[in-house]
Image (cartoon, rainbow, N blue to C red; front, side, top):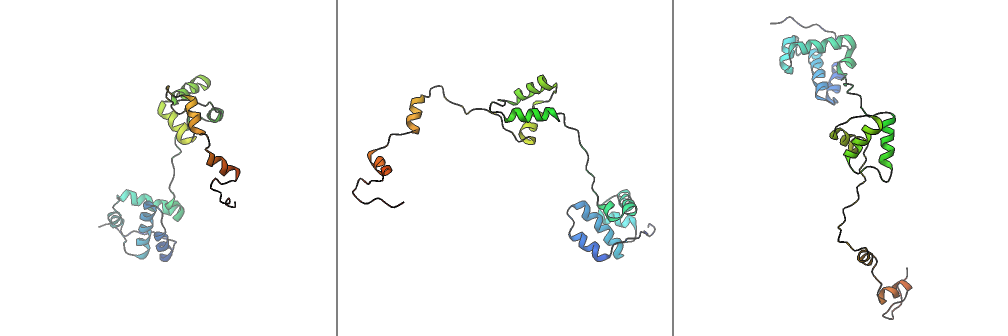
Length: 185
């Protein structure tokens, strides 16, 4: 059996309960639950606290240390890893955006890959180029729709602009072929 845990919790039991109900993430909820149990006197030993939370004693000790150092804000703070710096940035990124905005643009991601290598000396994998262009820059490649070699342009024009019949011509002129008065517009 462990010794009783002594920690001064500044927040009231009601405030902890309200914070617990409004917690956004599971990790915040766990940490607030720990403080609530300690403040309400339901638990007074670290090993019992760890068992109830389903965490290791070291984790509970680390959380309590964070609370002692900076209070509730420090305990609930979730740090974010900075991540890797992007390889295409600054002028190269601006030039790529400008080239993608042009009407001719690029026809393939491989072409973008070659352009980055030739112009800026940046070597990226095909997947990295695809993710950069498609998802980060939200650009699409300028690839025309496929057309059959058998298409006849004259037939397509005739299909798009059919000749008007007599009824169509009369309707456009505002006359009716049936002798009735035209509908008011």
